[in-house]
Length: 504
Ligand code: BG6
Image (cartoon, rainbow, N blue to C red; front, side, top):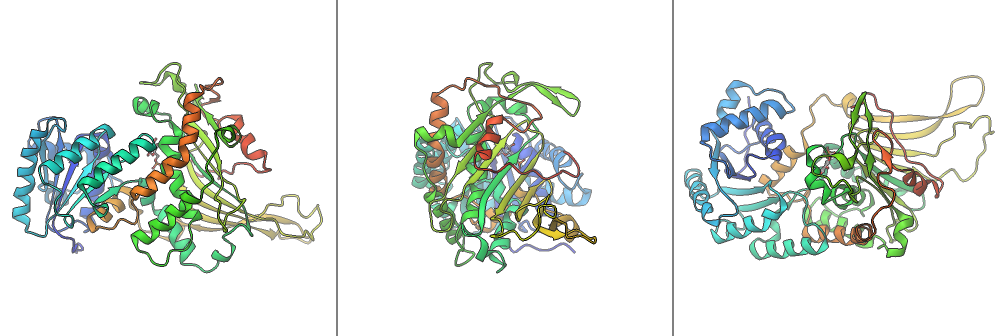
């Protein structure tokens, strides 16, 4: 029998109801939440957009989207029938405030039908230049006044730089209270990323070692095989620092670097995370060239197919100065992490799609084994693999079986696939459910977003003001520019990768 959710009746308004994010992520996530019994008993999903659709036509569109993109494959007839009747459409042009009149009428209709407890969630899955317009219209039409029952979910990018992020925060704070604002970073909804909290704070084993006394350095590497594809227009104004490091990678760094929270309360956790960002060493302009590397891909071959260089992608300037790769060495200036480098790297069109965090421990203080016994010697490492493999590996030295004392590194592995037979929800399923539950733990608070922008702004400013003379500087299907290897090799380390079982 299907589980029954205790959630209050919910109206889910999606701005960008005909857009790509809704098609690929939101609609399938809502449907999967429904089939698994997590949706409220009474709910209504209202897609909005400029196109004119009847409810029936829109339901058809959403059905096709779910069939194409749901992790569970095609819908089941009976559950779709039940779900589909809750899907509606309200034609709204966010640049024409009067069109919010119709949306308000639709919302009020369901509010009346569902009762006074009904909550309304406005999801802004549109280009960021529409965020202020929509927020202002919601305010004008008094759709956000009940702070317990109305929420706004904002997609990234949250601002284009520190200044615009501050402006957006200021504008939102005039209309909403912070507890109504849900700034999405979908990495925080990933199963393995959430597990980092459990791993660190539900085990007593690691915490005593989790500091500068035992850890030598940390790497956070999010590499992608795909290029910018059809998103060249957006990416050209963003680049790898804005697109990935300012948000996803710095959030991962916060989870690795944070102090232990006193409870699992959303603000307590977000306080601990923002402390990490505040403790990070700011860059002086003259330090950037030794601590940060940028790259841009040229054409190459990926799995037997020729792929264009970044400058030849749709929507990209043929002389573009935008980086499709970035590697940065950060420090956290506090008692726990003083002097320990955190190397972050991300890029498109790299050799492998993989997100891993590697924690390398210091070497043993004294070697007792002969050099013959230790030819493959390797310091202990903890590797948290976020995707595509979902695992945590502890690499230790062990004696190889045989009559001689020969050591080699072995992995102690916790692998999701081998341990659990339940499916992993998509990040958006977790995050949408949290938004309906009013749980902000996995969402970014305003001060967090600003602290992250503040940290990366000196690099962005330097890179934008000085055009790179060697772009493009890495071929598609490589590991990025040579300078990125040099950045870490100067300190005696190298970037780790996991051998992929099934190359994506
Ligand atoms: C998005 C970026 O936020 O994250 C994309 O805008 C990137 O450029 C994507 O490809 C990566 O997300 P995931 O979940 O595929 O690792």
